[in-house]
Image (cartoon, rainbow over all chains, first blue to last red; front, side, top):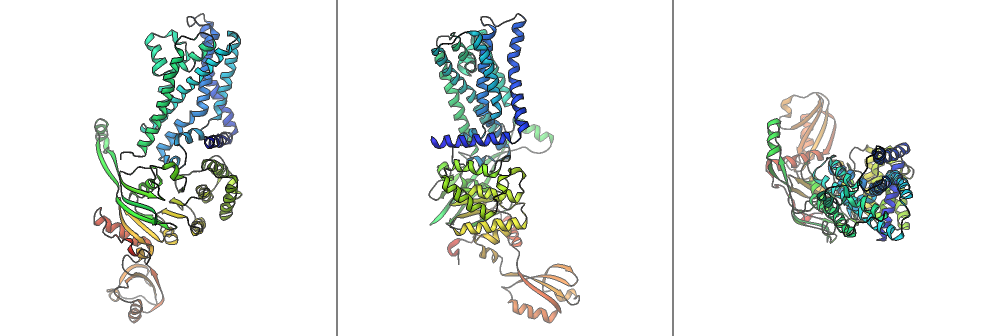
Length: 260
Length: 343
């Protein structure tokens, strides 16, 4: 365990050195990533200013959901964002053997060596929105905050699972840069209060591809509006992550030619 | 006891036939014909500890596939590989801790940052202690004289400087076996010499090298043991010396004549080149005639001002082996086994 922590630390330092080798590029990337993702809450502002709303949810409650989604997205992007593109590049160029030559788990090595510090801007932006939303929605109890942390972790597991599934598919669909588009459109459901959806969509977004755990359920915990049975919804999130990890390793085995 | 034992190694791929032209392409979109590729077929060889073994073969012969299986990056279809008691694919993480690799066409260094930072990353990955790392880095950087250049970003280094750093990256953890895939490709003469000297020096300390190359000078300078693979099969497995004498005892004789000679005089001599009317290149087979007798006969027939006798170029030896193997089909026709490998 200690060895893996040391490896992660060294690789993260390398990633930071790599990103800051081109200083202007790093700063611009942070700003663009932040601007692109903060645009969405601005649309919520426009919707509510026009008199429309999401039934049963105030503006700041919806902002809280979207800020939690942005925070989760920022963290996942920072830690796992590079795995898809690096995997695709290695498969396309036939250089995945370089990864397999390292005496560590290949998935761990790719995650560690693709730490993306430029997504830190997203965390900052999400944090600012979170602060604004929480300041308007009332004081949060310690129990509610603990529930929030647990559900936020489950939401992160969903984001991680999605990233790993996308990266795993790139072994087969070599050079397909459209994969992230499919998953981005699915993730969009997680930016809204799940109660506005029909029952079938709500169930799918909670138990099948549990994107509602990314923003909605953790925010609901903070607001003291947790639906009974939500903690059970953490189980599919963990299973989703485990599936993503399994699928990636399975694709490596196929790449290595197991079974000829 | 051999450090690498490969027995009946086979690797088969399934690929798909696309055909050429618009009609075939559209047809293959709906129905593709499977094609079985025998990339490596029933190869066996053994490499002793401390050897430098050259693996040769034309493009597409199966060399890289064989080396990937030896590195643990590819599962064999059948057969077995034992390297230092490990099965490379079954115990990959433990096994690769003991080997190193340098790929001439794939870099392990991180492009945007100095090589020294990549070395630190490998230090963490291989669990090298601080003291060991400092000592080893000092030893390798002194050998290659790269103390200053390893502080510059990899992208600004010349190819020769980058390859030296690749070698350091591969050898920091003191691997017992190092796989070299085209390590001198694209390098100038001085850089090649430096790399070869480095390999010889490290080999003296007992490190085994497996060298895949198309540069026959690499093989001549470094390898004692040569394995040639063609069409997925092994066609040669013996010493370099036996490779050079594989095609009989042929020699090249370069003559500078004092005056042009009539073609009829050269009827019974194999002329393989003529740079000018006075400069001839001949090929003789010493199994037919001793070199002394040949020169004596020649001096009776011709008047020459200069003569030089050379070995048959390696390129010609290898080309003949490749083409003989092609003529005989996939199976080897000339396999010299290693009973007297070092005699």
